[in-house]
Image 1 (tube, rainbow, N blue to C red):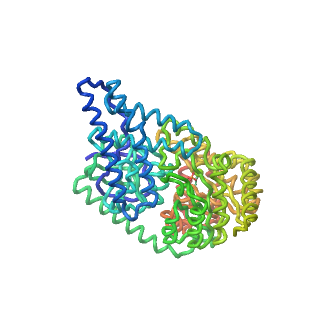
Image 2: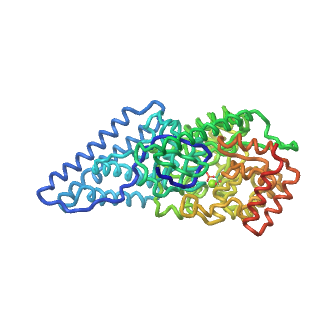
Length: 583
Ligand code: PEP
Ligand code: MG
């Protein structure tokens, strides 16, 4: 038996067989082909291309009925790429003229094509390099006589994965969203950190997951029996019977705990001393509202709309977005906070796999509101769709990653422009939609009072706030260990934002992962937070924490924590805070 450890996401235990996704063909063989073997090498290459084409068509014909609707168009894009002369013809010439082996010939042409897409300014076209890489990966797999599953196959795996554990080097948010509805038991990845979007999605799917396992791909093979223990971040490979029995029992205990929590669903989120706390849900896709209902959320505190834009060849039209927002607004009682597009960094469109070399800095690049302001053709249809949909429910607009007042002014001006357009066109819309901002950049947090004067609400995005304050890339597993929500700078910034909201008399919520972690509920209550938004899978646990807390006295204890100069004592103080008052 082998034991591997990484960063656990969630608390559950999964037992199942591994499906290893084939994502890397880094060791491309390079050798010379003798003149007499050239025709055989060309045949080998053509055969691989034909096999991939046949495989893609087979997959397309047999798509499960519950596969995401865009999957077929996605496969069409790959079929078109496969027929591109750069992929299917030029390597043949290179094999012939330079007597290179098929893999190397393919690689050299594919690299040129990837570089070409890489240089395109338009993010949609630029992301096509990911499709090229996936198609090339398939041909390489055929050439190696080992066609592996690619991430884009996830949608085609059917919905009978209850006993299966996905093993991958990395899963982009776009890959992970395709896992929705597949019912797999868990997933484990080599890369990723606790607040990477992949981890967030694992929480939203309510799945145990382990990220940051480093060499997991090399040590786990298809069909290996695995135990995934998210609470300890451990993967056990090929466990023996006694160990399996022990973990099955733990799994049952966890299920019993979850069942007990469901009894809280319709209980009020009120502290022991009678203060009502608002518990909202974070959603990624319209389908997620089912989870929100069963957890008894008071509304949606964060709708990550960028997921509507992933795994498809073109962005959704204004009307398609309108339908998606209406779907949520009509079904959710309470406010629905629709966050405008937060694409960029690790969240790429079209199944985008960020280029590892640039990921480390792209979190500081053109993402979220920066991208939207630079591409009004992307932003304005979304604003129009939200304002139109807001006729049918309690919608709020939330702008992500604000760092300067200028960005806020530009956003407000665009909203005004869109309202005027809709008015002129006599299209029904709601001109009074509250407009809030995410405070997730330290610059915005320290000047939150200024933002608060121009906005209807603030929401603290601790995932990015921690990333930017502590200078740790949230998707870089090598600096995961520095992720610390209790860092004094983070706590002080949170306090600053909450105070700014109170002084401006506008609500402040928190929608980062910290809001859904029961270890921080009392601390946040003590800091004055009254609105929490989290993945639905966390909601019942937080409700329990709220119901066991007494506000009186919390702020004094929190002041001690904020003034603590010893890291060890700080953790002790937080433990003490969490131990008091339980019923
Ligand atoms: C955050 O940054 O805390 C947040 C909620 O947004 P996201 O995780 O989507 O960046
Ligand atoms: Mg964020």
